[in-house]
Length: 108
Image 1 (tube, rainbow, N blue to C red):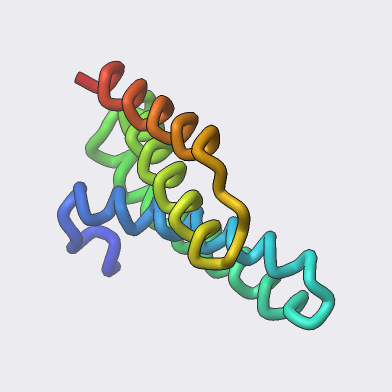
Image 2: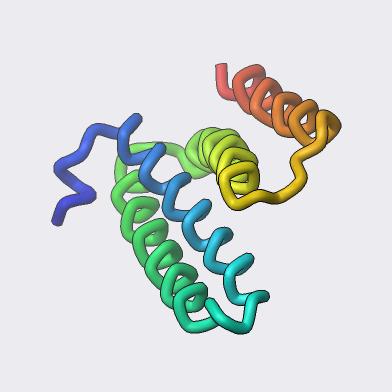
Protein backbone atom coordinates (compact mmCIF):
# COMPACT_ATOMS: atom_id res chain seq x y z
CA UNK A 1 0.00 0.00 0.00
CA UNK A 2 1.25 3.51 -0.88
CA UNK A 3 0.73 4.88 2.65
CA UNK A 4 3.23 2.41 4.09
CA UNK A 5 5.97 3.39 1.62
CA UNK A 6 5.94 7.14 2.43
CA UNK A 7 8.06 8.73 5.17
CA UNK A 8 6.17 9.73 8.31
CA UNK A 9 6.57 13.54 7.98
CA UNK A 10 5.30 13.38 4.39
CA UNK A 11 2.45 11.13 5.48
CA UNK A 12 1.46 13.60 8.22
CA UNK A 13 1.27 16.37 5.63
CA UNK A 14 -0.73 14.16 3.27
CA UNK A 15 -3.20 13.23 6.02
CA UNK A 16 -3.60 16.89 7.01
CA UNK A 17 -4.08 17.76 3.34
CA UNK A 18 -6.72 15.05 3.03
CA UNK A 19 -8.67 16.55 5.92
CA UNK A 20 -8.33 19.99 4.35
CA UNK A 21 -9.62 18.53 1.07
CA UNK A 22 -12.66 17.13 2.89
CA UNK A 23 -13.23 20.53 4.52
CA UNK A 24 -13.09 22.20 1.10
CA UNK A 25 -15.66 19.67 -0.10
CA UNK A 26 -17.91 20.61 2.81
CA UNK A 27 -17.73 24.23 1.72
CA UNK A 28 -18.53 23.31 -1.88
CA UNK A 29 -21.58 21.28 -0.80
CA UNK A 30 -23.12 24.52 0.44
CA UNK A 31 -23.24 25.70 -3.18
CA UNK A 32 -25.98 23.96 -5.14
CA UNK A 33 -23.97 23.91 -8.37
CA UNK A 34 -21.04 22.04 -6.76
CA UNK A 35 -22.92 19.76 -4.36
CA UNK A 36 -21.96 16.44 -6.00
CA UNK A 37 -18.36 17.49 -6.54
CA UNK A 38 -18.14 18.64 -2.94
CA UNK A 39 -19.56 15.34 -1.72
CA UNK A 40 -16.95 13.49 -3.78
CA UNK A 41 -14.17 15.62 -2.22
CA UNK A 42 -15.50 14.86 1.27
CA UNK A 43 -15.51 11.12 0.64
CA UNK A 44 -12.10 11.11 -1.05
CA UNK A 45 -10.51 13.31 1.62
CA UNK A 46 -11.83 11.25 4.52
CA UNK A 47 -10.89 7.93 2.85
CA UNK A 48 -7.34 9.15 2.21
CA UNK A 49 -7.03 10.56 5.72
CA UNK A 50 -8.22 7.31 7.31
CA UNK A 51 -5.79 5.25 5.24
CA UNK A 52 -2.89 7.52 6.15
CA UNK A 53 -3.81 7.60 9.83
CA UNK A 54 -3.92 3.81 10.01
CA UNK A 55 -0.38 3.72 8.63
CA UNK A 56 0.76 6.41 11.09
CA UNK A 57 -0.83 4.73 14.11
CA UNK A 58 1.24 1.59 13.51
CA UNK A 59 4.41 3.44 14.57
CA UNK A 60 3.31 6.49 16.60
CA UNK A 61 1.41 7.35 19.74
CA UNK A 62 -2.08 8.57 19.01
CA UNK A 63 -1.77 11.66 21.23
CA UNK A 64 1.35 13.02 19.57
CA UNK A 65 0.14 12.22 16.07
CA UNK A 66 -3.16 14.02 16.51
CA UNK A 67 -1.49 17.08 17.97
CA UNK A 68 0.66 17.39 14.88
CA UNK A 69 -2.30 16.72 12.57
CA UNK A 70 -4.31 19.51 14.19
CA UNK A 71 -1.50 21.97 13.45
CA UNK A 72 -1.07 20.83 9.85
CA UNK A 73 -4.81 20.81 9.17
CA UNK A 74 -5.34 24.24 10.76
CA UNK A 75 -2.65 25.77 8.57
CA UNK A 76 -3.93 24.12 5.40
CA UNK A 77 -7.57 25.03 6.03
CA UNK A 78 -6.63 28.69 6.54
CA UNK A 79 -4.63 28.68 3.30
CA UNK A 80 -7.48 26.97 1.41
CA UNK A 81 -9.96 29.49 2.81
CA UNK A 82 -7.86 32.31 1.38
CA UNK A 83 -7.52 30.52 -1.98
CA UNK A 84 -11.30 29.95 -2.13
CA UNK A 85 -11.96 33.65 -1.54
CA UNK A 86 -13.17 33.39 2.04
CA UNK A 87 -12.61 36.39 4.23
CA UNK A 88 -9.69 35.54 6.50
CA UNK A 89 -9.25 38.12 9.24
CA UNK A 90 -6.10 38.89 11.21
CA UNK A 91 -7.87 37.42 14.23
CA UNK A 92 -8.30 34.09 12.41
CA UNK A 93 -4.63 34.08 11.38
CA UNK A 94 -3.60 34.87 14.96
CA UNK A 95 -5.82 32.05 16.24
CA UNK A 96 -4.34 29.62 13.72
CA UNK A 97 -0.86 30.74 14.76
CA UNK A 98 -1.68 30.14 18.41
CA UNK A 99 -2.97 26.65 17.62
CA UNK A 100 0.17 25.78 15.68
CA UNK A 101 2.38 27.30 18.41
CA UNK A 102 0.56 25.32 21.07
CA UNK A 103 0.97 22.11 19.09
CA UNK A 104 4.71 22.77 18.74
CA UNK A 105 5.03 23.51 22.46
CA UNK A 106 3.16 20.40 23.55
CA UNK A 107 4.77 18.00 21.08
CA UNK A 108 8.36 18.70 22.18
